[in-house]
Image (tube, rainbow, N blue to C red):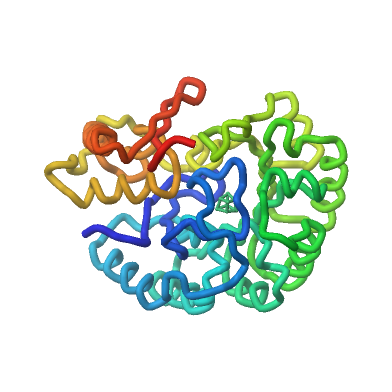
Length: 326
Ligand code: SF4
């Protein structure tokens, strides 16, 4: 069956084969990052609401479980915006753990709602928290992350350090560098101090590898990336979400024999749902969703014909993104 709020699994270089839960349903976020892969934020807010109620999300997850899919490595709360803005977060974490007691629950977050002690308390129930922090220079933070008014990066950094004191799980920090936005020496110096105080379990310094919201956002060169990685003692290089270091068995697309679109509309729905959350190549979709490469191509052609998909060349790869370009 098709799902509205469950997507993937997708391969993540950081956490493995990850089944995604979308806690927003729409592009609702406290930031509007220039590099965002899901596109421009439609509702730039800090207010917490049950944007997707826990009961609805957990019912979908229960149905997904009953369908007998291959069990992922982790269940990740994320989606089309900032998942901790969903005020049903505690019920969702608890419900996921009841349905999949042996799987870790990860939460992707831009960390801005964590200035609220209540959000920090709720996140203590997760197993892995993956915050992002791109700049501690206020002007850079405003330029790259375009946050809601009143959000100060130093407050967010302090909130993360508070959280670290109590949290028993793992913190995987991500720093995304965009050329000319946040690759300054001033930011590097502040981030070094912050990382040494936070002492996360893992630091990933990455740059854009897929289309962002704005064409002005571009990657830094490998030399800059190396300097930052060394300075912050970051983990070895990964592709942000679909890296080859995911531990999964590599295989050719021709090995994958799941049904093709046309024979199985559920496969088409899964491809569409996955592309709505993250631009991907046909190969990545085929591998992560375990749908034949031909099936993915058929679905892509159909989506392109109906004008719902945009194609963009990044290096040697062709990424497909849901919705219009820009
Ligand atoms: S990248 Fe994350 S934090 Fe930034 S706008 Fe997109 S969903 Fe929000």
